[in-house]
Every structure is written in structure tokens, then in C-alpha cells.
Image: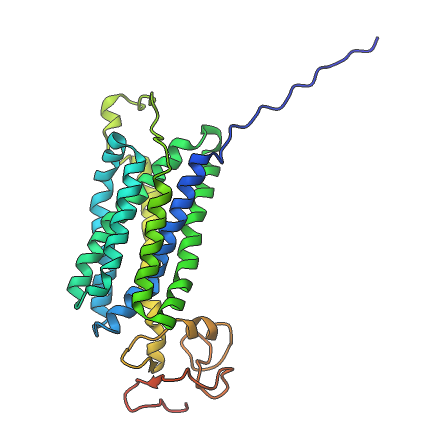
Length: 307
């Protein structure tokens, strides 16, 4: 007797790349690309046109995080009441308006005030986008959803600085602010397409209503501290690395903070005497013996010994 055994069909995985999920991801890509444009532009603007020092650079860049830190817990509740889309649209809008105003800042204090507004926009957009991804992700594919959504952040932060450098070198800082603002407007345009992603019948929080109102869960403390430690180092690195080449003793006319492009180029070539282990342009043995036209040595006493 021949026995036939029916094969069980594999369970169908719930769809992840829905139109709503793609819209959230594309809006995030546009937003964080604009954010990435500011990574090299803001420190260079503070030390260049505003003629301020390292302390001012730290304060102006850090003002962004100050407002974002205090507003994020509050805007999360607004997202639960209003929905995720209003947060994303409001956040990208605040980002756009504040960035387009950077060129009007005549002092580090004025720019820091605008950076506070940028941080408020970041708080709204980031919380709105992150919670929308969590709403849209099927329970079986939540980790996969977070991984895919995080690509938008890192691609934007990776591509944005390069676009910002090109804009500054070709057309000045105004072009960088316009480019970042255009990216913010693109994020607004795409975020408008995101539907209401809030769950219609949210599951009760474990432990009852009191547990649902707890802001900081004890299980999240250790992962949060690990993440904080990593971000602290990254924040300092991204703040001052655009200005690192000025420590080599050369800078653009009227600025003590030079382009970060030579730092990228030189890091690939080994050579003695450089803080990064590479010979900067203009030094004997460097593959770029000539400095870019119009650049001057800014070190005290002119060209350092041996150059």
C-alpha cells in the first residue's frame, strides 16, 4: 500500500515592505541626509565666518542635542494622541525652517538658538518615525523592520556630509543650508503620505496601568547606558573632525577650519609626522605636493619645520 503524506505549506510571512513602511523609510532618508549635510557645515561655519573657537563649536553643535533630549519624552505622548504623521511633518518642518535661517546668524549665540529649534524638530521627527516603524512592523519581523529602517539613518548620515562638502566648496555655506533645507522639505512631502499607524486596539501593558505609565523601564537602563557611551564618543568625533586639518597648520582663506576632504584623502596614505599617520598635502613625500589654490599656512611662524 502506498501512503501519501500531504505536505504542510510553510506559514506565510506577513508583509513588511508595505507602502506605509516605505514612505516612513524614504522620509527618514531625506531627513537624515539633510541632517548629514550639517555635520561638516556647522563646525566649519562657527570657526570660519563666525570666527569663534572650539568652545563655541561644542556649544553650537550641542545645543541641538539639548532640546532634543528634553523634548523626546514629551513628544512621545503627543504621538500617541495625535498620531505619528503629525510628528514627522512638524519635525521635518521645524528642521527646514531653522536650517534655512542659519545663514542669518551673525554670532554663535544666534546660531545656537536656531540649533535649539533644529533639535526640537529632530525630537518630533525621530520619535514619530521610530514609533511608526514599530507600529507597522509585524511582530514576527520587528527586528528586521528596525534594521531596515535604521539604514535610512546611516545612509543619510553617510552621504549627507559629502554632499555638504561639495556644496560648500562650490557655492559656499548658503548652498549647504539650502541643500539641507531642500532635504527637509522632501521629508515633509513624503511624511504627508504616511497613514495613521497607531494601533486601534493596543494591547494592555504587562503589570497593569501603573506599569504602562512608567517612563524608564529598569530592563532598558543597561542597554541605554551602553548606547550613551557610544554616542558620546561619536558626537565629539563628528563635531571636531571637520576642523582637524587646521591642526596641520593650513586653512582656507579667512578660516581656521579647513575642508575635511584632504583629511579623507590623506588617511589612505601612510606617512610620517601626521596625527593620522598620513602625509597631508604640501608635505614632501605627500602624493598631493601642492595645496589647493588659495590655501595658506595658518600655523604660527608660517610653514612648520620640515615642510
